[in-house]
Amino acid sequence: MKLGLNLGYWQRHADDATEVVQTAERLGYDSVWTAEAYGSDAFTPLAWYGARTRRIKLGTSVAQLSARTPVATAMTAMTLDHLTGGRLLLGVGASGPQVVEGWYGQPFPRPLARTREYVEIMRKVWRREEPVTNEGPHYPLPLPGGLGKPLKLITHPLRPDIPVYIGAEGPKNVAMAAEIAQGWLPLFTFPSKISELYGDFPEGFDVAAMVMVAITDDVRSALDGVKMMLSLYIGGMGAKSRNFHADIVGRMGYAEAASRIQALYLAGRRQEAFDAIPDELADGISLVGPPGRIKERLQLWRDSPVTNLLVMGPRDERSLTTVRDLVLG
Image 1 (cartoon, one colour):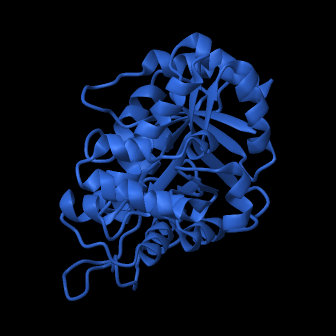
Image 2 (cartoon, one colour):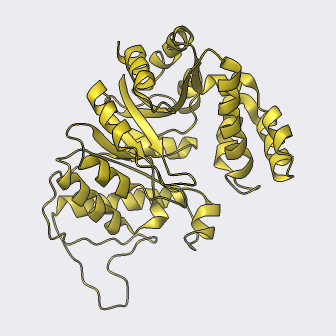
């Protein structure tokens, strides 16, 4: 199992994690990942960290499709991959209608078809086999009826096959990721239920699961931290009629709880929403507690299809070292 560090996106204040990334590289972490929602973008921090490291891979988890056209993402990825010596892992995802329609002012039709088309165009750009055209309905190239002509990327990519990961939660989206991408970036992972929910994955496919980690003797407090995050995502990170995070929790076997959590959260009853989250759900998707407890629970992840553990939470050298020893030791 590979080990990565997921930094997420900036919260209220800017977050230059250069020292953390350099420590992770020195300790042997395979990758570091950044994200975006409607604050900091995913690529700029990676360029910053890439200039200050030499080996650690640099991943986006995830870059939102609606933030950039396919060719803009392909150009950015090619540029960053060149400047960092071929270290980019490009994670992309459709996000959700609240962000896409509310922040980017774009419609949210057919996320699976759009993702497939998006990835196909990026690969055409990187391969430089011919001027790029696309007859798909979502990103037609050239624009029909205009003066545009098919173009080919000026710069030769360092790698014409930059690894693509897809952030996905629905079964059909995960199946598509296994078909067209090099990896899958699940946000919530109940390791013992992955095979039941999604079946088998191709050999060499990277299941890079994000997992909250807290090394502490206070298991109760650590679980409450996970529950706080879950209450936000299940309750507030999505529309009432379309919340992908609530849906995945439902498929894990907590449909009744997810419905209650969302209803309470949207009614402004945040504490009750928090209280409605089952401890076993919070514990199942995280690794919290003293080292011995985490080591024991890691076996569930080792026995699952997960091939890459992207830990969220640890920032100090002692915690990063402990996690490294537990996962890679």
